[in-house]
Amino acid sequence: MINEFIEKILVHAPEKVDGNRVQEVEIYLKFIGCFELPAPELTAEEEKRQEQLRRHRIKSRERYQKIKAGEHAVGQPLKLTCKCCGKEFESRSSAAMYCSPNCRAKFYRQEAAEKRSREIACENCGKTFTTTRNDVKYCCDHCRYEGQLKGQRIRNAANRAKKKEPEVLDISPAAETKEPQKTA
Image: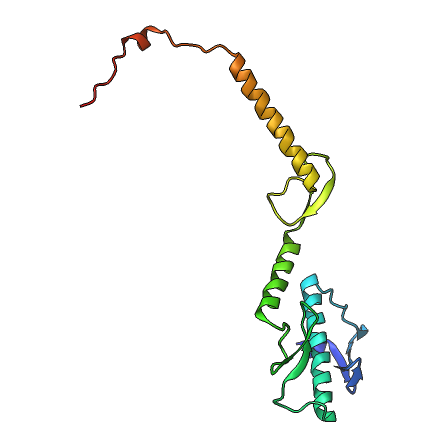
């Protein structure tokens, strides 16, 4: 049934564009002519994945060129750069990104902290600042100290107010009839 709508399909020779193999295909439909598919709109995740694949292909080509030129022998350690500290290190695996487990853990801690970061207002001065912790209330040590002093003044004032109030004794009839409990 689909053949009734298609007039012809032209498949062009493959070409290399920016290191990628690209092949153009033209579809001609009866009564319409050349039909061009709309370009797909990629989501942010798909764009990120495409970028990762592009970087991987570039790295792979570079590795192949080094082997081909005799700069690197298969099975020998590769010289790589640590993603966290930027230090150069050797690894047998081309997929290694960190020079040590400590660097890897530090990188992931920093990445997690960036995801947790949020803007809040200082409880003392009202200035907006960025933090990665959920228990931070003040923008700096000076504001934290001032906040502690304010809290102390409020607590002291509350204690003084309690001392000034006269104590109220319970003199109700129910309180008089209670007998002390006997212990055996």
